[in-house]
Image 1 (spheres, one colour):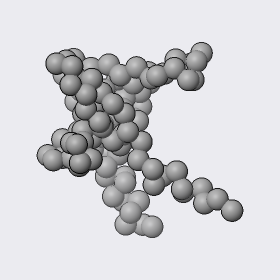
Image 2 (image 1 turned 135 degrees about the horizontal axis):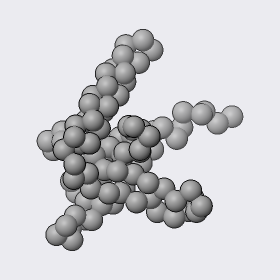
Image 3 (image 1 turned 135 degrees about the vertical axis):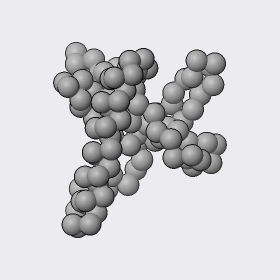
Image 4 (image 1 turned 90 degrees about the horizontal axis):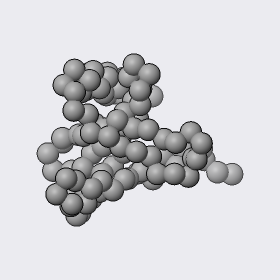
Length: 104
């Protein structure tokens, strides 16, 4: 019998190409929906698979509904207000996670 939590142990990662062409491997923390748009929260990792500074990156996230196999598109958030909203939503997400851990 498979444990339904098995898949949670496998960290989802994505490779992100930065403006200067370097590739960064990032752990996917969560996907947040803010005002009917999806955003992905990424934790950049170094070569050892570790995050050095605790900084997270937010990107707009969109999937092609007609082709589930197509790579999702990540867009840079260039609007400060929008970034703030996503950042606030992520803080809320973290609060909820910590709360869940306390109630388990």
